[in-house]
Image 1 (cartoon, rainbow, N blue to C red):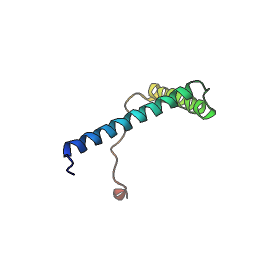
Image 2: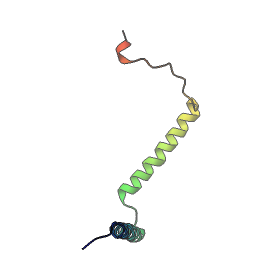
Image 3: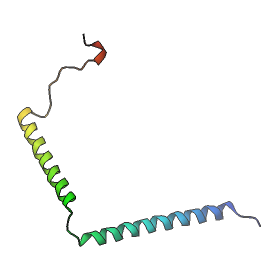
Image 4: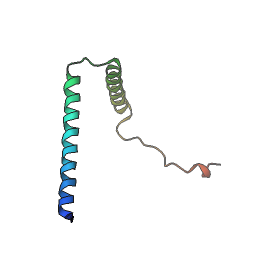
Length: 80
């Protein structure tokens, strides 16, 4: 039996589309399942850490300015 290359390509494309659809449905189910739960300790800790780092960075920018004036760096081999 002769199999047309176009038919093979159509079947491959259909399977690819089905896989993408299944992945989207799986991710949507994960989001729906997690929407009802409270944030875990780790999520809250990381959120706090992120806010603290942003605040620290803003304080550094206020203190030192946006552009740090540094001397050009030299390669480690040229230090004597």
